[in-house]
Image 1 (tube, chains in turn red, cyan):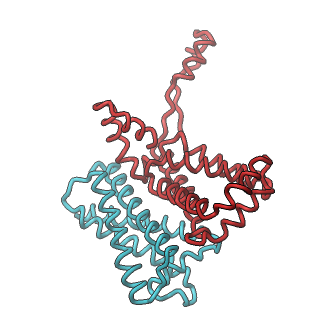
Image 2: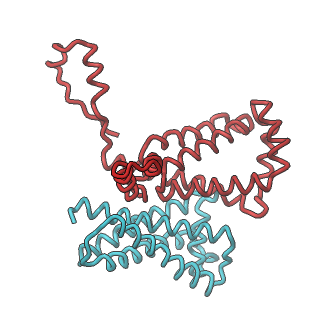
Image 3: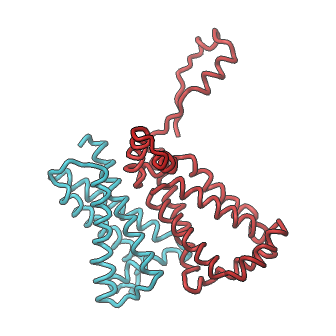
Length: 192
Length: 141
């Protein structure tokens, strides 16, 4: 990511320090084309990370998912959460499996294809937070913390606007939102 | 004509290379490359992972070239680029994975292998369309 500043040393001495700081805040941060491509590549790889995790929890049996959900009963650092897993999630493992599979498939498609990539990042953050809550004490503490942070990094960036469908979608949604004052288009343009 | 074909082929090669890298990154490592080799019945041979990688690269270039042919003498729009790219990914899946791999070499196509091959080749299509458009924009086409 590249930033630009036009402040010169000779000018700085004549401007009060408070104003300098205000100027520094208002200088727009511009992201270069190569940086955009790089973050788009990171988005594809993070999407692929989620995509690969689908294959050990495929329907109809959901494979090894039961073992990991059961591990959350004693693994959570919030005891109440462990109880919820034990009494609500485990008895309904079929529903939990279907939900998990569908959401992770949605995250994979969104991030790999750059289709509403910010929505994909938001869903990834939610799923990763759940894993952090339930499993962080059972493995290296930062494993799931990093998974949360990866999604957080992708959330504010328009990563789908390179190597993704968002590049086509974004200007159309924004034009529709401003021309027709469409709330739906404004909401959707938030996610590209 | 040559410029469009060249851009199509190089965009396809780049998308194929990225696909090869993604196929390499797994628990194996590189076990997913065996899937690509199995489309041609080469999964049991020595150096099958290398074959798999080469297949992704060559087919990437080939479908990129085809993409270039379809864009010949046409104004390049992002929407059309992405759509034709997706069609190339779909054509790869139908011709190589479904007909050659599953039909001729009897590669099992269960939910897992369908999801993996289908979505990865659609990803190839999006990368191809996007890279082609990007390269055309840079060269002022």
